[in-house]
Amino acid sequence: MLELALHILDIAENSVRAGAKTVFIDITEDRMKDRLSIGIRDDGVGMDDATLKKAMDPFYTSKKVRRVGLGLPLLKEAAIRAGGSFTIDSHEGAGTRVSVGFQLSHIDRQPLGDLTGAFMALIAGNAGVDFVCRHECEGHVFTLDTREIRSEIGDIPLNHVEVLKFIRQHIMEGLSGIGTEAKSAHHY
Amino acid sequence: MAKLKIEDLKKIKEKVHAETALREGFNRVKVTVHMGTCGIASGAKQVMDELLRDIEEAGSTDVMVTTSGCMGLCSREPLVTVEILGQEPIKYEYVDTNKMRQIFKRHVLQGEIQTPFVLARGAEILK
Image (tube, rainbow over all chains, first blue to last red; front, side, top):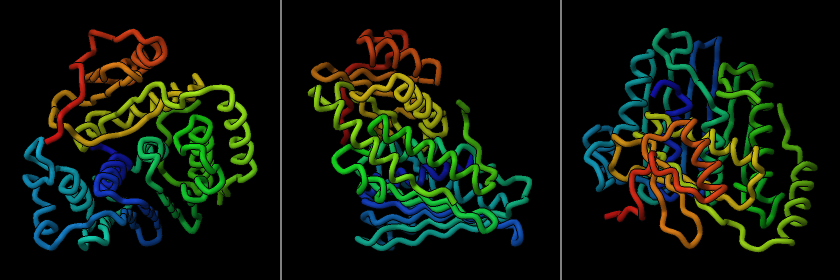
């Protein structure tokens, strides 16, 4: 995992597997405070206290097909390496929230990377789940709420090719409009 | 701040409705990109991005994309499953953007299985 966009994709996929209907992703770049914060919150099944304690153990996973679960530990390591912080809260039946902070200027902080690609993968790959993304950079805010799009397009699925093109355009314009360091991997 | 262009969405809705009225069967092919931590770490996002762009480029309205978790074969990631309606699913291993492009053009669009990249046939059984 070399980009924070990949971590966001990974943690949000956890939310989807936890049966979330809506996943909230918040990113804030604050150069004054030299801080980059990322929050991922869902309304999935959540974890009880015992599971939550084990969740940060790389040799614990809820899956049966393998014996390691590296997603959360990798993100925690990435935060700690970059003078940051990591917290996770969860309540059974209510959902989970992961919050990570980084020192924005830290030399070991991973770049945000291809956020457009990460959002597109989440939205296109999980058409039944809603994503509410908010990205703030120096007071400029970009938001994307798939619930708004869904209410406009009615019975057309969110992963219809025409809708996906629209969403990609919206994200790319939105992100370039707020002056974020996040890049789009390819350019048309 | 970029506003959602509601007008554009309305146009898309009308256009899609007009097109689908002519044709039956929405999803002819289902493509699954395995998006566990292992998949993402070995390039599944790039593969997904390539797939979405190929679909957008071809304007395919009958291809459904989805993601799934890890199925325990982390060392063979990125994995992609292509399932054409009425046929057995095909799993591809070590997929990268070039292979994805070829799989999309040859298998998804033309129905030719790309044997050199195939890991297995059939669906995984989740315990």
